[in-house]
Length: 139
Image (cartoon, rainbow, N blue to C red; front, side, top):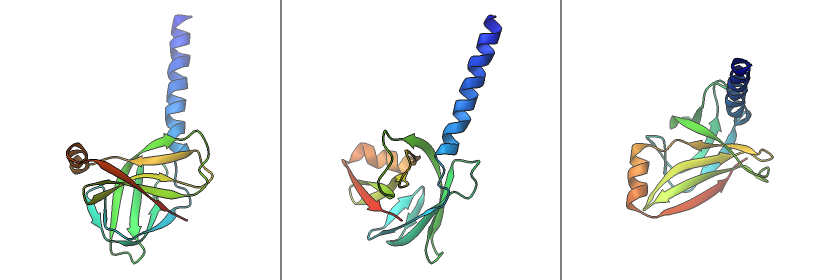
């Protein structure tokens, strides 16, 4: 009986663990425009129009690409959840000093979103300066 309970709990944890990333997918992609340069992972992106997509729904990786295709970056993400569905799509940047980093992405109508894994450079900047959040609406 004890082994059956352990196996049931293990199966439930595995099922839940695999379901959360599936809920945090950026199925249709999202467009946004910034008036400032920013970092997406290790890549410095110029101000302009961008599209966020998830090329492979089986991985926790996003593609952030400029509308003209000149700038792009793959970034790892962590699924996140909010209490209520978001009323609008947005990308939130965290600014340390004069440097902005992509932080979170939310899709309108969804309770699940993504948090971009911070790089070592971002963590270093975070420990050295105060943070300001800059949300940008997407479509």
